[in-house]
Image (cartoon, rainbow, N blue to C red; front, side, top):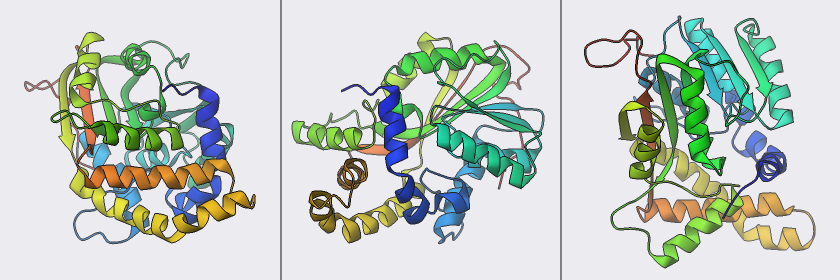
Length: 299
């Protein structure tokens, strides 16, 4: 299947209520899954912790300039700016989210450090080598041409710059069975995703565009509690969805969102996909002997 820009915008427009009231997105500034560790039990805390964990993975420092590809309502860019004092550019194709992100940055007092632009992150128009980190949290899954994103990330990054992608990767061995492929299709169609890659496919794309030091880390056990929370919501709301849709109370997009979420959880439980973090580096720049750019951890 393929997904065009308008389908992605329609998905996020159609699920605004879901994210705001069921996922508590505005409290955390987050449309993504949470990261549970160190005794974290609270949903909003876990959402915020995901940003801190990934900031440590990306080795962010106050000197960095970050491009947040598919920045949602701005939570990650804002929290990173607050934590490190570095500059960030959020790129997003969904107009209402860009507006919310700008307002959130103003309220947080970091609008001098963070800017949000309405643009396609596969063709941003940003200057060459203008950023030191490209950050993509559960956003590249919505892109039809993932190679175009990897190519744009390489162009925007300065030598030695780092790329961080966190998303859903499909199992390679054994490959998904036909019934699993159908479930994956239900999930992808409901969430406006053209399809998912395997780790090998990602590494091939990254190396083809000139990235090195490619690493893939499975953090599924940290994300699993977030999926369990989603599962509870699906079990609560799912049985009523068909009737409400027939009555015109539930629009097609949120109804499809529920069906997709149920398929996602079934496929996770079956081990067909896992939540992974992909990192890579553009050659050049100042690095330590391991090929990494040192940075403090984030909380």
